[in-house]
Image (cartoon, rainbow, N blue to C red; front, side, top):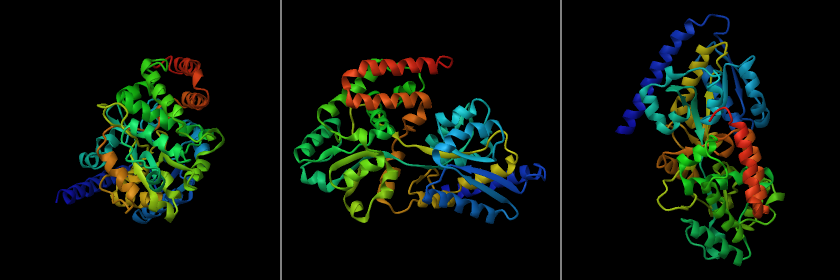
Length: 421
């Protein structure tokens, strides 16, 4: 019964928000009232189709309103969005949450959308999601999708090697030893792309030092030469000493490293749930998901769980129409449709999840974990992240250079955050 009451509350909340927005739309003036421009970075086939379908449904629900959807590849989008926001912005942008959202909120580049965040809506999305789009007590976006990170394991290969559940760091080291003895690379990694290394840094730091400490580091408030950071690399060095990673990881992209696991030459991989879209029917039978293991007992668990959102530029021509679009994107049925296509988890907890074991495990994990980091290159300054990830890769090849690597990252931290901390 409580689920039905929650659903009813959300329906009432959306209806109330829609009524408010209809009044706003009536006062917005005729010039742009029937036209909304949406810029999207969802250029991969399935996500692109899902966003297109959301636009079609919005137009059908709002006769006379025409939506222009502009889709860009991910890298071009990231490079262009600041220029759009400061010059001739669209009415709606798809973007991230957390630090990357606030970097546009704080200079006044995104509009306050708190009007559609009713109390029932906040309850439906949950504290974690709401906090990720909040700055100074106001909401600036609507989250619509997220996905979990963790270990994806070849259960058949681990079973043959005599590997049991990987619940602790010692279990992980033991698994590496047994898989090596069986002639299999324990962990598939493609560090040519750099960012896969950041997942290892994130999770070791989260499991050793905790979420609050991790986010202090991400915001530039803690030196990379700090003893806590050295503890992360001391554990990472143990993984290197146990030969946990494929030897040629610097030569492989993330996509190429997946093939190592699919071909049976590696036993596991630390990756986001988007990897499951590449599982063949045969792989789905043997691949299992496990959360990253405990490293330091007693440290509260947190997860890497990137969440994406829709927001309104401050300079949008049709803010009332854009607000109506964001309210539409909040609805459980719309979020369910989008995420069914993307094979991700709706941000609205009342949205139905497709029958997928990895998504079901992910939603359960995230619901039980209040602290969600957004991934290293989203949580910290982008330029610093790029430099640091190069350092992570270098450490994995030349661990004796650690002090020099960390000193270099910290010099960049001091320069980049000089006026903010």
